[in-house]
Each structure stands twice: as C-alpha cells, then as structure tokens.
Amino acid sequence: LLSLPSGTHLVDVHLSPGSMGCIVAEEQLNGVQVIVVDELRPTAQPGLKEGDIVAGVNGTSTIGRDTDFFSSLITTAGPRCLSLLRQGNSAGTAPSEPSPGSTFEVKVPQGPIGVVFRGVGGDVVVEGFNQDSPLRRSGEVWVGDR
Image (cartoon, rainbow, N blue to C red; front, side):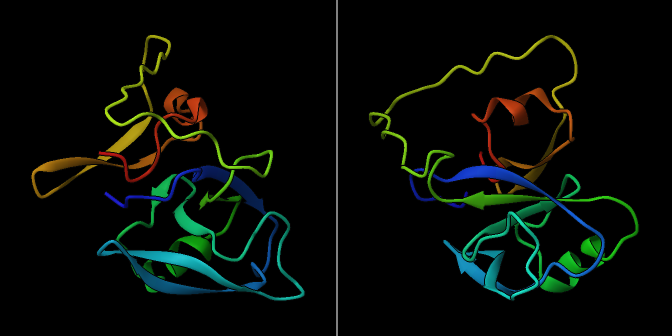
C-alpha cells in the first residue's frame, strides 16, 4: 500500500513520560497520509530519528490518519510505544533486494497472530499488531502490507 523504499523496517521506541521532543508533520506517501518525525529538538527522546514514519502508537495504526488522531493516542496516560518505519537495517545498511516475483514464507507458532487488518478498496491491509504478535516479531510483515 505504501510502497516503502527498500530497507525500510519497523522499530519500536518506548517513550518516557513527557514530551516526545520533536515536531511531527503530515505527509503524503504514494497517496496515503502518514505522520513523519519532521524535526528533532534538543529534548528529543532517545530512539527517534528525523524521517521516521509513525506507523502506530501502542499497536494502533496511524497510517492514513492525521496529527489530531496521533495526538489523541500519544497523550494518553500510561506507557507509550511508537512503532516507526525507518530506512536501513539495524546494522545501518540496506538489506539486499529480493528478486522480482520472490515470495516469502513466514512461519509462526500455532495460535493467535495478533494482527489488525483493515479493508481498503478491494485489498486487506495490515493496520497494526498486538505487542506480542509473532508476525510483528518475525520482521517479515509490516504495517501497510497487503
């Protein structure tokens, strides 16, 4: 759905109480509205990077939503975990490109998969994950996948 650049992966950032210490902005990515970390302030919480796309807050998707919706999620009491889409891998380099037409098999244990889906047109899109989702931990399924 989002046609994310190669090497984009999901990063979870657990926020401390208080301000995130950054400015977020609404942007269009391939016709879909996303929330982007636009500018870091000196008080920015650890783990945030400029250019991160906020995919969700505490497992609730922010893809296709506006900053008002994001603000309603981020200002809630209690623990806050941002799921961020970020370019590059944990080693700081882009992973190799799969060949066109490649398919992948993701193996998960029996039981609930902890994925929230949303119908968009004729597609079913991954909207979010529960915190303990085996598909989320696999790193093979992303928010926005069809």
